[in-house]
Amino acid sequence: MTITDGNATAMSGAGFNAPVLAMAELDDVLYVGGRFTDTSDGGVDGLSRVAAYSFSSKKWSSLGAGVNGQVNSIWPVQLNVSTAINETILAVSGDFDQILATNDNPAVSVAGLAIWVPSRKDWIQNLNVTQIEYGGQLSAFATHNDTLILAGNIATNGVTAGGAVSLLESGESLLPLSMKFNHKNSSSGLIAGAYDTDSDRNLTIYGGHFTAAGSNGSSIENIAIFNGSDDSISGLPTGIDSNSTFVSMLVYNNTLYAGGNVTGNISDTSLGGLVVYDLSDKVFEDIQPSFGGDNVAVNSITRRPGSSDIFFGGNFDAVGQFPCPSVCYVDSRTNDWSRPGLTLGGNVLELQWASQNTLMAIGNLKVLNNETSIATYSKKSEEWSTFPGASKSEIPGNVTVFTPAREDLSQFWIGGTSTNGSAFFLNYDGSKFQSPGNLFSEGTVIRGMEILPISKDHSSTTLLDNSQTLLILGSLVIPNFGNASAAFYNGTDLTPFILSSQANGESGSMSKFFSQKQNPYTTTTKHHSNGIAVLVAFCCALGCVFLIVLAGVILNKVQRRRQGYAAAPQTFGTDRPSD
Image 1 (cartoon, rainbow, N blue to C red):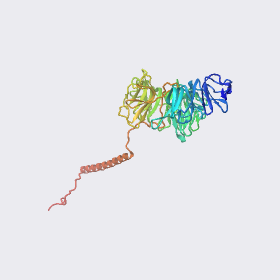
Image 2 (tube, helix red, strand yellow; image 1 turned 45 degrees about the vertical axis):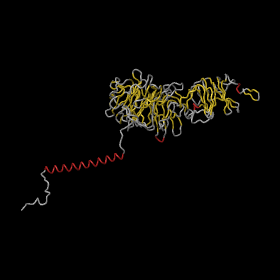
Image 3 (tube, rainbow, N blue to C red; image 1 turned 135 degrees about the vertical axis):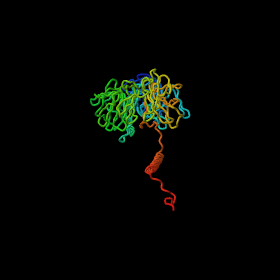
Image 4 (cartoon, rainbow, N blue to C red; image 1 turned 180 degrees about the vertical axis):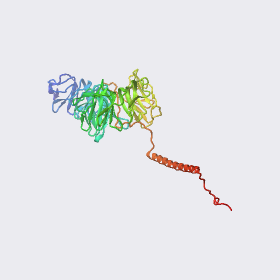
């Protein structure tokens, strides 16, 4: 009720259907929270534990769709929640863990604290802005000399990121992906990515298992396309099952190849492990290859250098009716499928080209019934062979992660889970595998690795070049530190890099690093500058000419001597008879 000049007046709706526990006024609007779900008279949608009352219109309105638990306090504060928000916000605190879904936004997990932005008429968790993650119970606040003091059980976990962050060029800060994600389960999220800059497009494509909100308010599932030209976010047309998970992507010749555990139906064609999408016309391709077998998954997609052949690796037995286990490729110009070699089997997790004619496959493999973690394929001989030192008896466990340390794959890193359940990672130096030792504690799961350049050389080590560092991603447990989602390894020591957490407060995990430029980080043999190279070549050419001339002179003299020629007398008159 309201009391004016001593007179009590019932507010519209005859109050609420359950107790009100908190109130706050801001800009002629009364905000209330408690246990209620509607007014006593009913008929106002979205009043779930929190509501707003306009003194001018004398009407109640909802804050989104509300929250899923009791609201204990509402505080109007100037809180630093985002660089894009510069106003007094409403900090809503209570016994809830979710902002309820609306027609425009999916449900968002929170940790007892939600932020309402009056000017946007929405929760900050629904906005595409960089924001700070807060959680807990806010019981009171005060200000002193422009300093805000918060009381209660409050925690902040740094920057909120829906599933991906960008590593800025300085390497000292992270920029969250400007996309609203709602992960379907704790083990998934963003897994793969690709870039498309053909035909003046500026697209970044994300794949995995998630739901996100498109720029037009639509719901996007498992593949999201961010257009850098207008900052819009869109998805693919309908036809892909919502339970699909994408783990591999390739963009080539205006076409997106997206693979993984993919099912669905497009134009009466059942999908199996792969979907092909025309980025230019924004439609699915008429021909959708379908891989067959048990637990079909296309885990890796790569193009053979200098050709139009697209190679697919994974867990499958055939493509359509064509037998083609583990690795198969298609000529993208003619759509003709072929099988590379006849002796490879197993589950391929990664494909990498060492050269135009040498392909490396990583996974749980067999070559002529010889179990191995790495196999190589020669395009010239069209045969597979096991990689030296990579047999099941020589590698401590299943290999799940691979990253090159040289562009020609003469050096690389592998990682995975050993037979005793512990995490391992190994370096191949060109002749043998080397272990850095047991650097992680129990419970570590390595999900990704990348070699990155560093601006300042570290001390010399046998495992890494001085100008490189190894980025390790996953659920990491570092001795004398604790949990981390990413860490750097410099050849001797681990340094925690990124800490992340889930909405429920549990430790987060990271799985993938991808960049627009492929292998910008691998070190190749250092070359002299062009000027020095030209100078050396010029000197070598002059030297060769001199040697050729000298050899010609010597050979000419030898030949003339053999033919009986003698040197002419050099003293004047010695060729004349004496008197």
